[in-house]
Length: 360
Image (cartoon, rainbow, N blue to C red):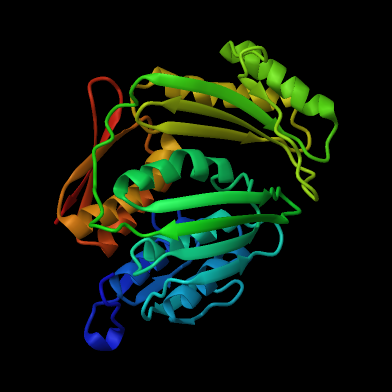
């Protein structure tokens, strides 16, 4: 990858306001990722000012510590509750890493913090992650494996994910492994404007440590609302691994020729199994009514790796989104601040939103 420089080499710091837009942890994670890939020091103030408990929590500290480890960097203000952080990256090193989060904080968000740097490194990396794998505040493992990793492969980046044990809120305890193989040639940005032909669709209910009737009721309701059946293999109950749970998640996977989407809803105390399934069905139906390639979460997650490819090649790329969340708009602003690219969005006549990423 490009030589990573320090502040003494004259690079202007990337200065971010953690209260901008949706004011959450994504500003920190994207800022750390951009700092590592560009070599620009990062200064962020008012971290997570938009949250009920502002400042760094354990899962955010884990992201900072992972960035320090991967880049040989330094961090000031990396303490619980801190609302300001100064991060100075060193040279990113490919290698073997282990990152753990106590409790159910999402270890997948830690992976997404260091993935941009490792996918541009000079060799393959293996990362073991422990913590939450199915957390309501983060994309679940299945989303990264089925929806996100295949798009990275089209850029030229290998991301192989293996799940050893699921970790649900509030206990956590999940374990997964990631193999990251950088592109052998320049990243290859591409347009993702259509889904292509539908190939497969199915739902699955995860309910380790809970009564079997919970998953059965969820799948029955999901099948009723979406027209999916057990006989067609569209309603599934994956096996439970040792030491999983308790926890509950219901997921829907929609496979198309150009893209795969994964939607997820989580059970919680006081919420009926039927309500969880209904919310998931509504999410699926909203995506199916749209003509866009990406749903609201994939539209958000896809933006940074695509922007990196645009930056490295100088070639514009576009994709369509069914919806732009505040999270996505904030991510676009941070990316535009940290890279010499612009991200613009405009509604199309068919209701989809066109996202353009192009060099400045």
